[in-house]
View 1 (tube, rainbow, N blue to C red):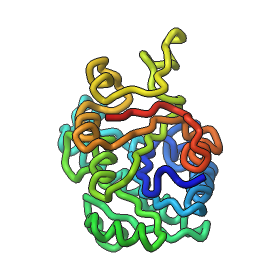
View 2 (cartoon, one colour; view 1 turned 30 degrees about the horizontal axis):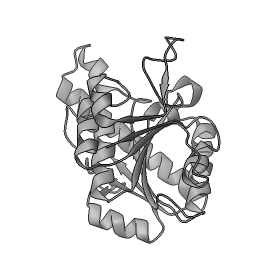
View 3 (cartoon, rainbow, N blue to C red; view 1 turned 180 degrees about the horizontal axis):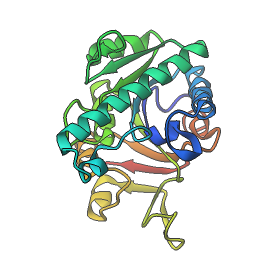
View 4 (cartoon, rainbow, N blue to C red; view 1 turned 120 degrees about the horizontal axis):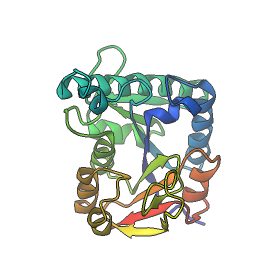
Length: 238
């Protein structure tokens, strides 16, 4: 069976790197994610990653505690750089070449963001980790994920979550919530589904980028979706 998607962007939350507590770095959690990534890379899929920073700092909630929204967002971007550098090192320990490109350039530990160079690295078999969000305040890392996916010509963006797709309501709070197997961007926007922000949905819709929302905490799901073509999670499509 041939590969349906040859170049993907994986959007990971910062909390996922923090394990069950969702804080700091949980080495076992990161090692597990690296194994998942290696499983699909070994099949020839080109992989880019966008990391969140919520395991260290979340800008918007902190802006309600006396920190300005702009400064809070920049601190959050810095947290994504920390996560990207950590992930790069875990990948290298597993024998996988990786590089970090950041919209918030940090000399000596990141490269400057330049999508054409990122494409070259992907074609050389490297994992490219994008950090620093969009480089601007008021934009989420979901929007950064869609933007980077479009810039590198990804066939698909995968949003890794702790639930197995998009529901009519939060399934962790509402047991009557119903899961969507597929949904269009327009439907998602009209229903005000909060799995991604409106800017991210609109950008993906405009560029006809399919997005799969799936549970990354269940071992093997990434391989099931990309290698075995199993219909897991929720497919958001044009």
